[in-house]
Length: 279
Image (cartoon, rainbow, N blue to C red; front, side, top):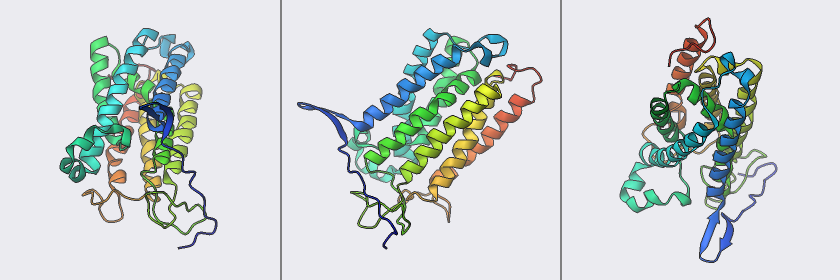
């Protein structure tokens, strides 16, 4: 296939910094940037009283530092286990040592979401705060991590798109000789930039943080839409049992997110008084 205007893959060195025998990879830096920017943004949200019912944010700045530790563990452990169990179990069970080589790439968003949800519930129970409000804060800050995570996928030349003859075709180093969609960049735009704009409008113009769970519901539905659309251009995971007919595993894993998102919006908005949604 010959695209109308073949784009050139920039072939960025996966290693950002060489320090003798130690190397710092862009992959790790991307996740660090997403986490730290998300942490900073949450601090800004809780420092803006007008966004919260009665002007009372659910967390103190000290608790946000604790939340960062919880979410870091959830993203790393959940994301990796999700990749192992949901997308490529045959490879990892045949090569168990590869499970621990996180620096080589391979993190599942849906696995990370499940782990984050469990640790948000644990965090809320330990510190006696609303789990829904904590989830709202995490979701509002997540576009930073989603954006940088997809950029990391692009730099690592992983999770590339389907073969194409469109003008956006790009030949990836480990993706064969045919040009492919740079689907990681599509996802970075939709899950990162567009998501941030949508959630920012929701929180700062429609004050969704005053109704716990509403921001999370909006986030879940938009992510499912963005991911399902991007999957049209992304190469499906090989031999995944959840690749059914025209639907990919990534799309089918988004179905529960839509259902839960609708429930969260409904249960948050049905309350007359902002901030009184059930925990």
